[in-house]
Image (cartoon, one colour):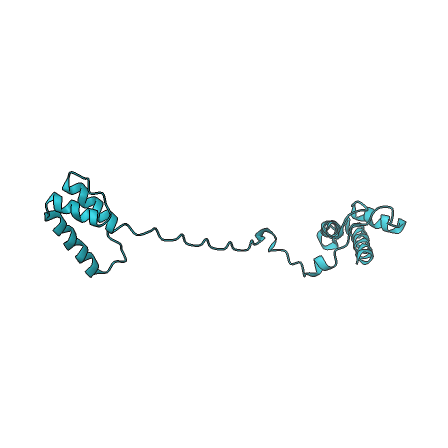
Length: 166
């Protein structure tokens, strides 16, 4: 066995020594083996040479295992698109329970067609939908006045609920 870290000169010396041993008679090789602490009972030169070289030049120990890399901190990628410092999250309030909503506010919730316990996001969504539906520029001449009246009601309801929640 040859260690990868051995110097070239050392490897050459080992090869010379092994070649010299291979030329010796079995009795002389057994005497050398006993001098190195081996029993030297082998009856074949090849077996004794193998045992002698393996004992004197053992394989290098395995390298220590590389330390495991530290795990990277987890990123919550699903939530990275949220901006928790934005005004939408700063002004967020819990939905208003029906018992606390006044009679006037109930009228505004009904105008927008939403439940009294709806949150700010639901109110905004309903307002945008109805504002597009009743916008005067999007309606025909015959129903333009009715659409304008409904548009003003929707805008008033949205403003009142926004003021109440904000």
